[in-house]
Length: 486
Image 1 (spheres, rainbow, N blue to C red):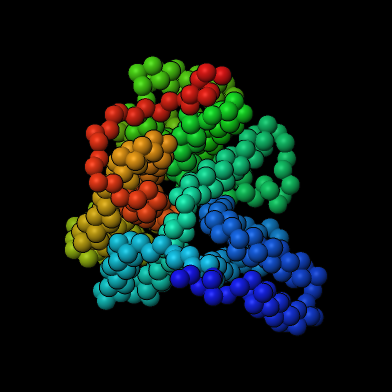
Image 2: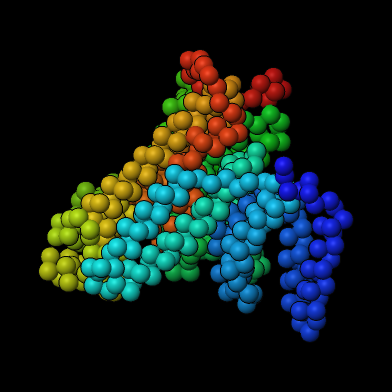
C-alpha cells in the first residue's frame, strides 16, 4: 500500500504550510537577493515534486555546463552544487514517502564503485603523498554519489531519455552560443562564460575552460543527436536536429582537439554500421560536404593543428603539445613497470614525473603534470589490479547495452533499441577520447558508464520480461515513415 494513500491532500498542505511559516521566520531579515533566490528555489522545489524528472534534467544541465562554478565566477552567486545532492536526495525521499515512488538502486553499479573507491583508498598505504590519495578517494566518492543519484531516477518511464535529451540540448546550446560569437556577435558576459574561447590560442573551451574535454563531451552527443535526426517525424524536428548535428560538429572542429577528431571517427564508425547501403553512401557524401564547408567557413588555421595527427609518427615534426604528451606516456609506463601491481597511488603521478622525466631525458614541463591518458593514469597510479578492475566495469557496461538492445528488440521497441545503439556509439567515442585525456572531469563520464552498466536492468524494468525472444532482423537508422512520405 503506497504511503500516499495514508496521507490525504489536506494534511500534506498543512505540513507544507507549517514549513512555509518556518522558512518565513528564518529569512525574515534576509536581503532582497536572498529572498529572490529563495523564491526561485521554491518554484524549482514545487516543480520537481510534481515532475521529478525535471530535477534529473537540471542536474545533467548543471554538470555539463559547469553551472555552479561559472555562476560563482560571473555573478558571485552562492554555490548551487552544494544544494544539488541533498536537494535531489530529499526529492527522492519525499516522492517515496508521499507517492510511493521507490528509487532505482543499481546494486551492481553500487558494489562495483564501492570496490573501486576502496581500491583507490588502499593506495594511501603506500603512496608518497598519502594525503593526496586520500583527497582523490573522497573526490571519487562524491562522483559516485552523484552517479548513483542519477541512477535512482531510472525508476521513471523516461529517465534514460531525460539524461540523453538534457545532455544533447545543453551541448547544442553551448555550441550555438559559440557559433554566434564566431559570426562576430558579442554575447552578454553572463552567457559568454558558458561558450568561452581561449584568449591566447583561440580554441573553443566552452563552460569547462578545456577544449579537449569539451570535444569529448561533444563527441558523445553527436550519435545521440543523429539518432533524433533519423527518428524525426515532423519537418521542423528534422530541421532542428539537423542544425543540432551541424552545431555539434562545428563545436568539435573549433576546439581543434585531435583526440576529439579521433573519438568522433570511432563514434560515427559504430553508428555507420547501422546504416543501410544507400545511407552509408549518403553519409559519406554529406560528411565530405560538411568538411568542405567548414574549411571555407573556419579557415585553414582551424585545421592546421588537426593536421598534426598525421605527423605523430615522426618525432622530428611533432609539436610541443604532442611531445609533452608522449613524455607523460613514457613516464606513466615507467611507473607501471616499476610498480606493476598497485601503482604509485592515486594522484601521485605528478610527484614522480619530474624525477623519471629527468632520468629518461624527456621534455621538462614543470610541476603538475598529468598522464594525459585515463588508462595509463590508472596503470601508473592503481597498477594492473586497478586497470583490470576498470576494464571489467567497461566490459559490464558493454554487456549492459547489448542486453538492453536485445530486450528492446524482443519487445518490438525499435526506437528504444536504436537509442541504446546511439548511446553505445557515443560511449565508444568518449572512451576512445579518454585514451588521450586523464580524469580531470570524471563526473559525467561515470554517469554515462553506470547508465550503460545498468541499461539492461533499466530496459527490463521498463519493458518487463519476455519468455521467447524471436530472432531480430537487422536494424538501420532510417528517417521515420511520416517524414519519408511527406
